Amino acid sequence: MFNNCTNLAVSEELGLGEMMKPLTNLTDASFMFYGCSNNLNCEIPDGFLSTNTKLVKINGMFQNCSKLPKLPASLFNKLGGTAKFPNLTKAVGVFGNCTSMEGIVESTFFLGAENLLNIGMDHEDNTYMGTTRYTSRGIFEGTQITGYHETFLNVVPKVQNVSGMFRNCTSLKDCHYYKGSQVETRNNGISEDLFIENKLLSDTYGIALTIWRIEFFMFGAIILQIILL
Image (tube, rainbow, N blue to C red):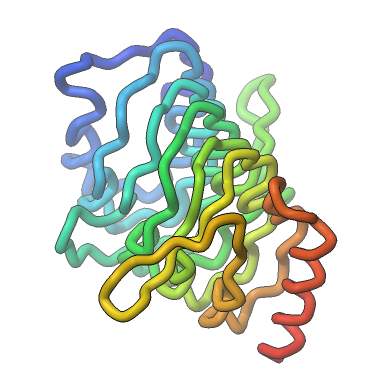
């Protein structure tokens, strides 16, 4: 809809607000804001897609929006929300190459999207639109996020592809986890429980967390998959 509208801007007061709220029959929001790279610099509100429960895919929705400042805590639900997205299976490259985007991947990020299968790079989903080639990146690839909560993938137990998920996330260093009711932080750490609920996972290609040794991560991922099998 707005793909490659490089100078698209929104009001500082209103931001993106609830522009998606009326679209209750929307099934495909792929590449909606792709390439809005110069002036789309507002925060994406929590639960931005909470009324769009018929969605099937949102591939590349904000990909290459290089001025977006912050990752929302939850894309699908506001705080305390209970929206469900039973048909949503693909969220490839949603924030890929959003190079100014900071924050952490909260445990609530995918809440409501339990049937997601693919949040990784998907070559089959690279789509021609006119003369533009759309390349599907990892969902957080190339962002400046600094950490993740180790349980954020627990709510998507059917996911099969997380390839490129944290590729080129050069600021990523922290793993957040629960200790009792408190959230603790492990600096420069990787969680051995990151994929504990993802027994159908088959593709972790290029997931490499850039600031850690790639060899260590990939070795750990391979061992973990063997254990899960």
